[in-house]
Image (cartoon, rainbow, N blue to C red):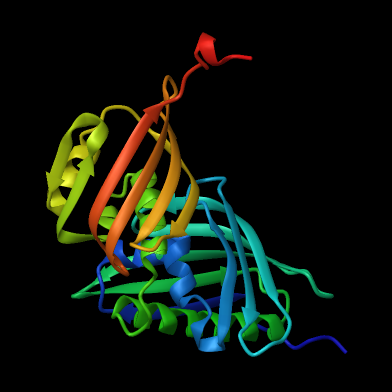
Length: 270
């Protein structure tokens, strides 16, 4: 029996009392997404890739905390206009049914709030459309709670990882939001100290060239967190180690050590 007509596009919208930049950061930073994505469903986002650039990969894998089947979604970003619009393919993976669809998320100023709207096209059936409608409704409620600090704050390790991610994206507002207002940042290799969030953001924003950043490690330590990254402007390549201290969600002390990559000295070659 043929299925009755149904809407192939699902639209869900919610006004959230938070700035565009903050909501954009929550949606596009994996370390922050793990704190809220799937919370209403009691899920744990144990694998998350969000390369928010055209052609970048999207991958989410969530498992119920009380046991049950894992949910996996993959896609590719085809629209990235920070901090206003995201577009991506959305493909269910695993199980007996594969569903290929496309979603657009917009972040629009709405008075003192930001209206977040998800438009999900290509629904193959009324059943799948209903699953997506309920899922996005829950997701926007979770985003609202995260933005208003009604959910657990990410660990200091995840905060440090998020800082590197935002620096790589040159999202200075989102990067600055991860530091305490009176944060102290030291670069011992150059004998420099930057006092205050604004000073750190300013020196990074003024850095010439376009740097690509790859985060290699982020770990909790006895006194805070540690991260290892590689940076390149196309001509030079550096390795960086950063040590952070402070409270979850806010870095108060940050020390960075940099070393330029080069050839092994002749006396150390075998």
